[in-house]
Image (tube, rainbow, N blue to C red):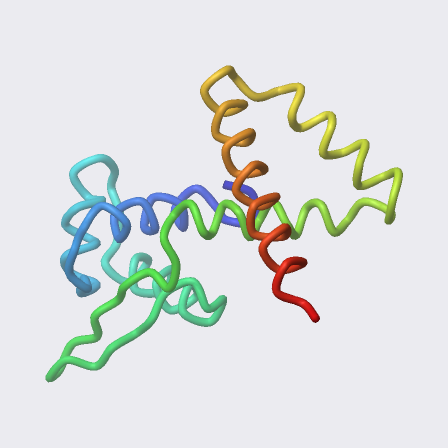
Length: 131
């Protein structure tokens, strides 16, 4: 994911894969099965993610527990919107969207069509309600 380092992504992947807030120790143990990693490194990464407002830090007796602020797909969508905001208005943004759509597979294209159809229905309903 753009905007996140490799270890930050690994930590976020672990947090997204669980249903309960995780302690530093739990995250460390999960990640240490795949790579050599210091406990303090995981603690620092979690603190950085909290400062970036990507995780919530909860105090639980003597330990902190961490959970993601957003679902993975919400974070990815936010990153996509941020990237789109980098394009110049009007033609630049439209060109970026067209280029993006040209790179999706058939299932993703179907999902986009469904989302656009739902958006049209919502927009049409708003117009019908206005006096």
